[in-house]
Length: 251
Image 1 (cartoon, rainbow, N blue to C red):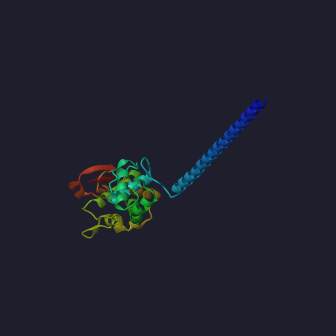
Image 2 (image 1 turned 135 degrees about the vertical axis):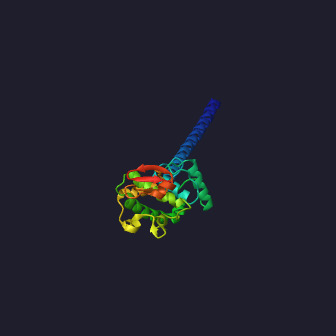
Image 3 (image 1 turned 90 degrees about the horizontal axis):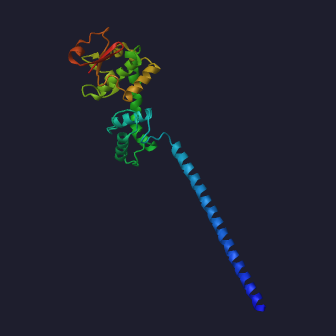
């Protein structure tokens, strides 16, 4: 009998010990789960904060982005000699490669993404140029094509920009507008003084579209109004492209 009681007591102590171990393991598991949950929450908070900070830095353009800001990016890259291809407002592989080449040339972080650092380097020197070009281009458009349809306004702006790219003319928008040939200004508004008139909102927008690469008359470098001028030299020496409103365009 004493032996049986002893055995029962021994078994009871064993079960109690196992139960205590089980409870300890359960507590450890609970503590582990709580720690994992806490770490997960902390990481999520950090991720949200980092994302917010990144987004707050300004517009970020990357592969797949679309719109006028992409067009401006493409035009600026092209102007700086980093070929972004056609200015179409679509951030595709050609634009991405142009951004990468620009980042490499300027010792920036190379990721193919146009963020604040890339914008600062790209626009720091071109911002003033863009503003100056917009200022004068919108004025020549307004003076030459103020009464023309919108497409005709953009076309006039495109002619000026096509001349900038040609080695036959000055290489700036202002230089083109104030260009003289044998003492005669190339554009009548310069002589008449209307070049200094404040442009309409539509003329400003037309200038922006032209600067962003819209080319309704292709590579035309000449235009005139047949009701005001015969344009004889242009007709005899240049190729006819099209007519928009009162203007005919030649290249």
